[in-house]
Length: 298
Image 1 (cartoon, helix red, strand yellow):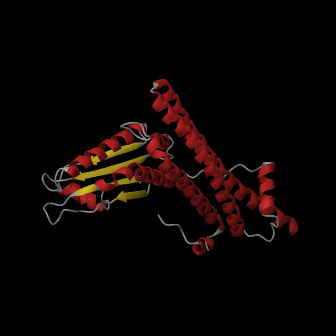
Image 2 (tube, rainbow, N blue to C red):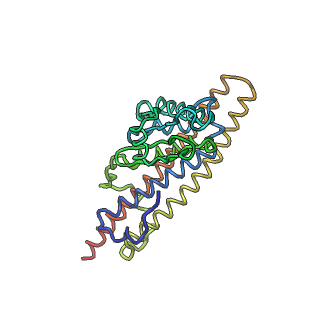
Image 3 (spheres, rainbow, N blue to C red):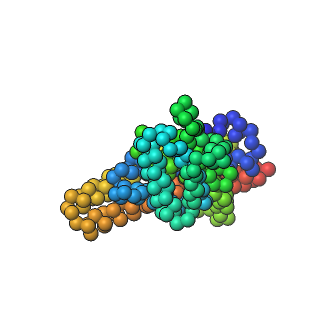
């Protein structure tokens, strides 16, 4: 996914500009969360199942998601290792559907037929094995609303990162399809928010909305970096507790340590959401205060 260049955004009418700016912030938030999650994913994975962060993500999806999984491997077309890998991918997707509580629905296409091959091609999947026999397809498409991403060809060497890649794609399409959130209530802006706006933008009359947005986003990134450092410390400590509990051989201690780790992850994710919400509120308050200052000057 590519981000829009700054110059086209600046040319948009004012009513459309602000949602785009905010969308970029929430996409960045998703990248930050999934990036930190990838660093810790292996240590929090339950044996034979989904990682704890993946389960948390699936429990908080903003919109329903559908996944079309194509495993079109004609018998004898590509040895035995690829069908085994395809089976493990199917098990992973089944676990995702179960953990999502119905928000993720999986449709499987595993019969090598012309109609299925055509559907795979239409979904952007890559045919292979053409020089050895019948065309093979092994990939998937993730969709929510009008947002769609495809994994054109799944390969065994990328299996260790598949859950992480899948999580990020699910997060992206669900976030893009989520209904727009109502504008924050600013009839009586919080004094602390107003103070932060005045601190960051002391000369309101001389500061454009675009410049203020850049200032607020810089503050947002700074707050994310500070929260990320704090998260790193807390998660390292929580993971160490899990390791110690595993070494102790006590099922009760291990369950308690894993529960604590999950609580730390959820708490930190909530903190990032609060930081993003503060950015949204700062932008709204700035525009209101600037409009008031302009009217007073007339």
